[in-house]
Length: 122
Length: 107
Image 1 (cartoon, rainbow over the protein chains, first blue to last red):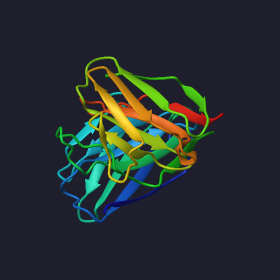
Image 2 (cartoon, helix red, strand yellow):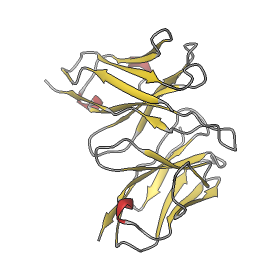
Image 3 (cartoon, each protein chain N blue to C red):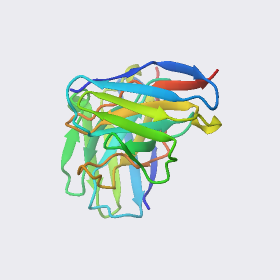
Image 4 (cartoon, chains in turn green, purple):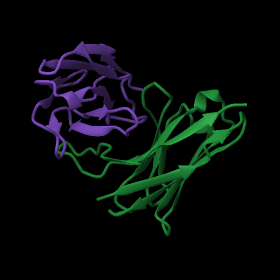
């Protein structure tokens, strides 16, 4: 059973850097990729990117130029930084992971953090 | 990027009714598609994986079908706790993308 607990600054000004951290409890930290997903208020879900324990990453091209996802295996934590934020980055940010291997050999998001509301406002 | 288009955007239904939600992909995703349910103030919950396999603990009234570009989530008889927003998501290639969601609301 995996539990994800996340935290970070909730109010930012335009041009500042968004920084969030997600701690992983339970499960095997080295077996999975760990993702960040965001949801603007009242809108749909956007996958931001993912990282594994070795630091291998996949990023969404829409954010790639401003995004850094990192891992600290000793603390079982993943972190995300988004630079030069604007109001368009206002969203609930989730860390999530996909642990179970499906019959078709794919993994889907079965564990989610509690979500962190980040508001960008001057 | 694979675009997932969900329809309709909103459905107004009564408990006990049958629901059919649609998700269409801009290119084939084979069966690498999931459905999630999200209630207000909560993270999404995985319902269906690989287009048609119910996740652990998901009631049998939820079923998924489809392959390639056209997918359907069916709720055979709506329970009060099923009123929520439903999203599809593919796992075919990067970037992973979600559909825009279908809100199932009480009529």
